[in-house]
Image (cartoon, rainbow, N blue to C red; front, side, top):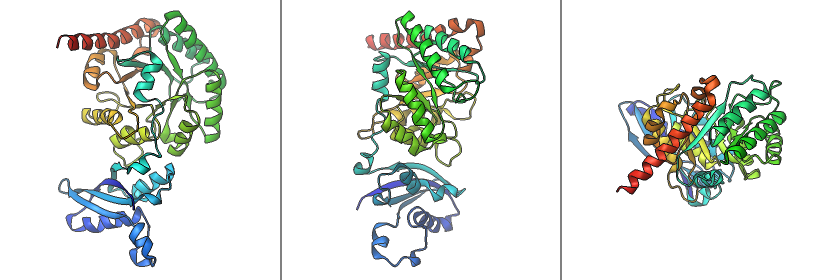
Length: 374
C-alpha cells in the first residue's frame, strides 16, 4: 500500500484536537462514520490515517494525514479533492504541505521548460530576467502593440498581456495576438535581442484550446494563464497538449483558498506544469511578508525529484528603484515583473524601460565581478 502525506494547520481547543484530526481523516477519505463501513478492505486500505499531531501555539495544531494513493487514480482534480476537498470548507483548517510518493509524483512531471528552458529561450545563461505588462485593459489594440514594441525595444525579455485582457470587444484575441506578436518580433529584429510576447489565455477549456492553437500557429512561445481561474485540471491538460509554450502562471483568484501561498504558488502550480510563477512581492500593493515571498521563490527552485525547478516572478507594485534590493533578496534565478511603474513614465516609457533592463543586467555584472574576486 502507498500513501501520500498531507499537513494542515487546525485551530482547536486542546481537548478536541484528537477528535478533530480523526474527523479530518474521515472527511478527506470516506466521508462517513467508521461505523457505517462494513467492508474490511475499505477500513484497512482506504480510510485515511492520522500520522501525527503537533502543537504550534495555544490554539493551533499541525495535523498530518496519510491518504491512500489509490484513491487519486492519477487525476489532477481528484488529487486536489483528496488532499483538500471537503476540508477546504472548514474555517478552522488550512492546507500547508503535502508529499507524494515517487510512483504518484511521476504522474505529474511539472514544467516542460522550467528555469533552464526559459534561459535557453532567452539566450540568458546566468543573469536575472525581466518582464513587463501591457496595461490597462480597455486600450485599443494599436496602443497595446505600441507598448509591446516599446518594451521590446527597451530590452524586456517577456512582455505579457495584463491578466484582465481577455477576448473583449475592444481587444479581440485573434487580432490582438497577431498585432502584438508582430510588434515584438519587429522590435527584436531591430535590437538583435530576443523578446517574447505572452498573450493571456482565459476561458472555458474549449476556448483555451482554440486560443492556444491560434497562438501556436503564429509562433508564439510564451503564454500567460491564471490556473485558479481556469481550473487546475484544465491548466494541466493545456500543458500536456501544448508543451511548446512557456507557461507563466498568474496568481489571480489564488487568495480565495485556505492554502498557504508557499503551497499554492511554490509547489502546486509548479507540480501541474507552470514554468514560471507570478506571485506577490513583499512591500508592494499586497500584504505578503518578506518571509512569505521568499518561501515561494525557494519552493519553486527547490529540488523535487524529477520535477524541474520553476522560475520565480515577484510582482505587484514593483519599482525600478528597488531592482538591486530585490535581486539581492531573490538571487539571479528570478524574473522581475514591473508594469505600472514603467507605464507611469508615459512619453518617457522607452527610457524608463531601458533603465529597468540596465539595472537588472548591471546587477548580474556586479555578481560576476564579486565572484571573480573570491
